[in-house]
Amino acid sequence: METPPVSQRYDVDALRSRFPSLGPDGGGWTLFDAPGGTQTPREVGEAVAAALTGPLSNRGTSAPSQRNAEDAVTAFRAAVGDLLGADPGGVVHGRSATALTYDLSRTLAATWPDGAEVVLSRLDHDANVRPWVQAAARAGAVVRWLDVDTATGELVLDESVLTDRTVLVAVTGASNLLGTRPDLARIADAAHAVDALLWVDGVHATAHHLPDLRTCGADFWVCSPYKFLGPHHGVLAASPELLERLHPDKLAPSTDAVPERFELGTLPYEHLAGTTAAVDVLASLGGASGSRRERLVAAFEATDAHETRLRVRTEEGLASLGDAVVVHSRAQRRTPTLYFSTPGRPAGEVSAALAAQRVLAPAGHFYAWEPFDRLRAAGALGEDPLGGIRVGMAPYTSDDDVTRLLDALATVL
Image 1 (tube, rainbow, N blue to C red):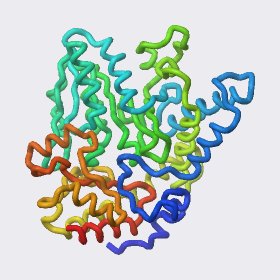
Image 2 (image 1 turned 90 degrees about the vertical axis):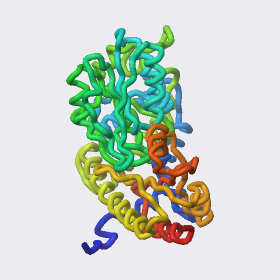
Image 3 (image 1 turned 180 degrees about the vertical axis):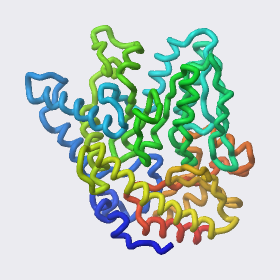
């Protein structure tokens, strides 16, 4: 199929001009580390600075500084609600997705009955594994597992793992290592059929496919704005009714209102303002009009088409390198993220050689310890302690970036 002109596909040059780090000040690097955190557009930095340097106090209504803080919180919850298809009244700020998962795992575990079972996934980042394993150990609950097919990268949806004792299923919305996107609707149906809750680690998924908590079946969704152009913190979304049933540890004088009862201490209003700006930047990428949610739908369709085209082009380039590269990201539904090993060449050495050409493509397990360990046990990664190299696209990734990556790999390998 003939490739259409870039201008008809996606105006990536206009988008890149909004990122200071992608201009001359960025040193001429091409960056494929988006799964670990994206670059930040100018609008987000300006929103953070404006919040910090404008009048700012603790939340209230008397002074402009108080109202600025209150407005930052309200705008943040509304923006994240639009992004996740969630009720703003159930949007919780946290220091990180990991911290939120640890906090809620302790709170939820306090409600588990004797003999409870928790179902986890071998596809997940450890932030959606270890908190539940440790909470289950403290509560005396049993941990059961959904496995990963190392040949395809698919999650094996063995529904017999769920029983009438299952209280929670924790699974990724998309693997940060392999890019695999499990069938969340099917998992949600299986979990809810046994009256279990579904916790989704949406940290990687949210950056590439627009969530909708009202339809996907997730009871909890956690994500990190710095994976989709925003500041470094975490977000949890759930229905306010569900959050009302949960009672975390908190200070005696602090409010018991939802969602504030889950937010410990004074909020970082500048981070909230930056996240609101990041959502607005995302909503601008599709060139659509209408509500912010409608603009986000159009924007994610546009970015998905752009990123998928680049992923396919990268896959074709890797295939042309023959046996020098083995790609492990093979799931039918996946994000624009590729994990590959380089038989005969240590991944760290290849990554360093790419960096010498100003191409950032890191090597390692990226805290996705379960799938990494499964691949290693299957012999897919050889004896290399770092395993493989991960490359991931972002909305600002360009054709020139892909060309530089493939040319650099061809030179190194």
